Image (tube, rainbow, N blue to C red; front, side, top):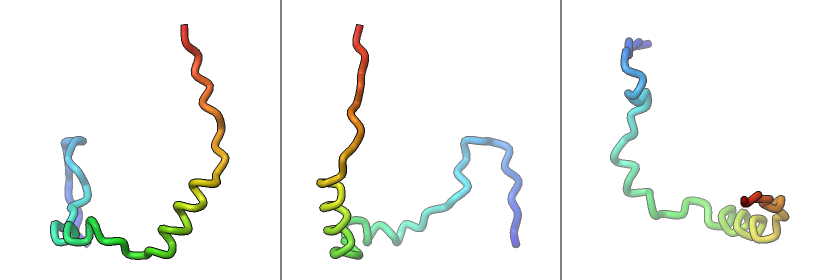
Length: 53
């Protein structure tokens, strides 16, 4: 295993492969996406209680 010493905390530790950009707009699991969207439509979320002055 290769270890790297990083002294700057702003440096990302993960390198993202640029070849994954071709999958950016492709839906990999359309049935699961449809099911998740239906669940989000019917989900009862807590009310947002914002106090204004």
